[in-house]
Length: 252
Image 1 (cartoon, rainbow, N blue to C red):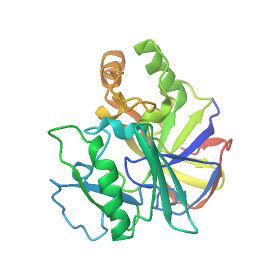
Image 2: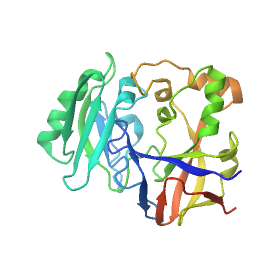
Image 3: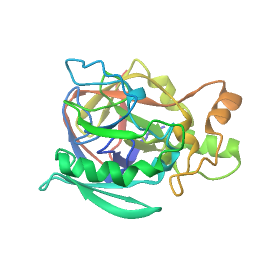
Image 4: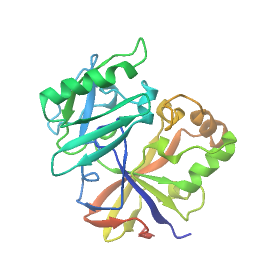
């Protein structure tokens, strides 16, 4: 079947909010502009200090350990360099993540979302490229038909935003994207290499409306298909612009 881009999403601060986009200009080997540009290190972080500035996801406050983060929304304002964050449990906050005084305000604002026994957020760091879960920077592509199959398995509708994908795709068969691994695709005038499937964690169990764990997504994947993967990593190999409604062409 012929797929197309239904939605584009970025997450300016890793695991802390999401923002819809209509279009984006991509560069080879890079993420969506300002996607996961910053990350929130927790107090137990042990940094490798890699030359590219990338650090493993276990060092960050994330939805896997702090499910309430799933209910956060974000808006990045390029002219001011600020991120506005909203959450149903507290008033909104606007910060410049590069300013130390704003980092202090942010940590004070967000820390009470962390459950007892989990390391508290400590500081924000900025990525040279993007603080994606893999050191090979990519966009995450989600097939909405695969998501619907998971919803059917669970027995109710879930928001596809709980997968925190960048590109949400309509018009495919369920799990069709799994057959793209090792192939190239074209979207708009950009091209991608589909590197591997995305292994999932407990983050996806939490509602994007409340931040409460309310669905056994990992169990549905395991019991329904014998997998822990949902979506694929798409590495930009040729830069260009992508737009909502762009068709997807598999290049083999």
